[in-house]
Amino acid sequence: MDDHRPAAMPTRFLVELRAPALGFQDVGELAGRAASAAREVTTTDAPVRFLRAVSVPEDGSCLLVFEALDAAAVEDVARRALIDFDRVTPVITLAAGLEMPREAIRSGQSQQGGST
Image (cartoon, rainbow, N blue to C red):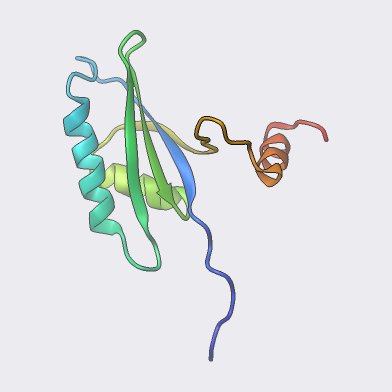
């Protein structure tokens, strides 16, 4: 039977990390583990891409950004990479000069209890 449903669109997810006792001294190594684990679990039907790591030395936080079909896939990657995280949440990212799509605004408002 031929299934003509549209493919699910990847979403970006933010992974908030727990700060280790010594801080995030080697964010490059952490990013490498995340990227490697994402490549290991990626299949045609369930792609996971590691996009970037953001370290905020002032407050000792570190954030990882992934693209995947669901949060469970991102959580699996983090566990495989031995990354201790607090939470995985969907995010909307924009490049400079671009406007946020109306669908994303409505979706974000409904998730945050905003009104239209």
